[in-house]
Image 1 (cartoon, rainbow, N blue to C red):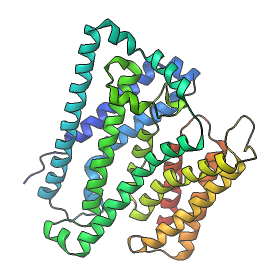
Image 2 (image 1 turned 90 degrees about the vertical axis):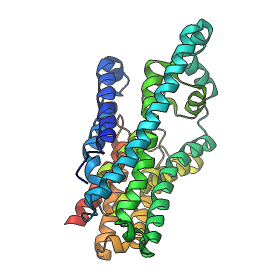
Image 3 (image 1 turned 180 degrees about the vertical axis):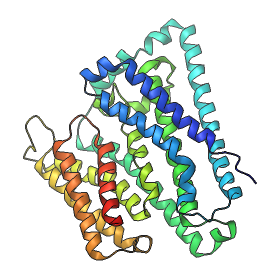
Image 4 (image 1 turned 90 degrees about the horizontal axis):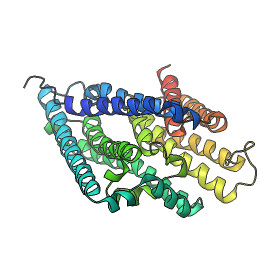
Length: 347
């Protein structure tokens, strides 16, 4: 089977999201700049572009033996899933737009300013609420480790080789199909919420009640969090896994320790505490160390190099936590800690 370019629908969706996200941000640049959101949203747009451009090369990078026929089937399945998902989401939005415009009462009820008012009245910035939000992010790690473990088991049993697959190609195919599928849903919902809120269905509005206050007028953190993992699909699995755990797990530990035990403010006019800051740095070090040792066969390097990677990742996590302000740590943490580890690994 020749190259049928079955990757094209998926790449087109992400490049399309780049155009829409970039256009939305530029159109509202004055407001975005005033609220310190402009650079963050431009970076999110660029992450969509990077995902769209890199997608055709992900499955075969670690598995160059994959036949073109098999690669086409992987692309085709993922593309069909996304096209069905996009079709369902678009039909849902159109349906809500029609019933809203036909009924002025429904249209008035679905005013975004009213939703924001209700959201702010119900907002709780306590440990329980924060833990619930962090658990959603940790689900990303569950997907990654579950499918990598499944791929390892099937590979060791010799099942994947019968299909012409290996651990990397099979596991990454499932991880990407599910992970990017959530990103597609989040972004179309966010673009609609921020522009045509009356088109949002009720289930989406209930879901948005759990987001953070700082996300009311921008994109939810889950989107850049997942997209920022994309470059590290080309790194050894331990680096990819460590990046995901640092961004979700270390950040969660820093937040929980800071809220529960934090007594000393990290800096003036900041909610971050010294206790949470130290906990996040130590957790990052431990994550890189344990993941690198646990998955050592996929990154066979010396213990000295592993310790150096752990230290560099921890240092970068602390620097990001201490000095960044207007750019989401869901972008900076994976990008900087991931490339920091990757550079140490290569040299």
